[in-house]
Image (tube, rainbow, N blue to C red; front, side):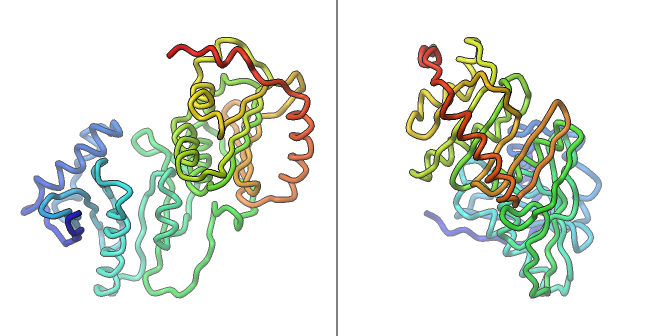
Length: 305
């Protein structure tokens, strides 16, 4: 593979490459409106481009010596460490320029990536261009390693969301850190979060990358129409990793990740805790009773191909 290189750029000289990357990632792939993507900051801020060989494949910008934005990597070049190299380059650049603090507005599904780069959250989830985001910061010269908000295994506060988008943000941050197991306890499959694409993709990813991964899904009200739901399609494709059962017991909407974090919701309200082993232990005692008295859903095997 060709060498990856990150360099500084300017809007006047490199706008064609910068606009092409951002158009493919934000406008075409993520559906961000063009009038939101292009703004007055581009001509005056500092830009960065990542190259693989001679091809521009990633970019970012820095506003007012502090705010990282428009971070993007073309889809065929993801999972190659290019995003990390862009952030590393900006952090070194900030140190050389004696900038003291870097901030960014991260899409919540990328929370774990930015956390591994040394950034910590300092806001609640919020909407930007229809996507859940979180504000994060990196102290350039600090030697402290504060675990910060929303870290699985560290943050034991209970956070509340009042909208579906906030719930999606919390869920995406939790999923971005999940590595071993997912337990979904559901009254039914009617809630929008049960169709959340980030959840479906995470289950696929963990099943592909971790042979010890397991997802348990317990449904309180099963109807045959659910057979076309993504959960059942995944079970049909990945039967060793996903098990779905139904129960006649009255059960809550509560989800558990890695036996450490929990997430529950009702209509548009949600609650989440990223480190609460005591509550999870109590919940698992009840869940195990429901699970052992539940039934496999035989009709779900008759899926259309």
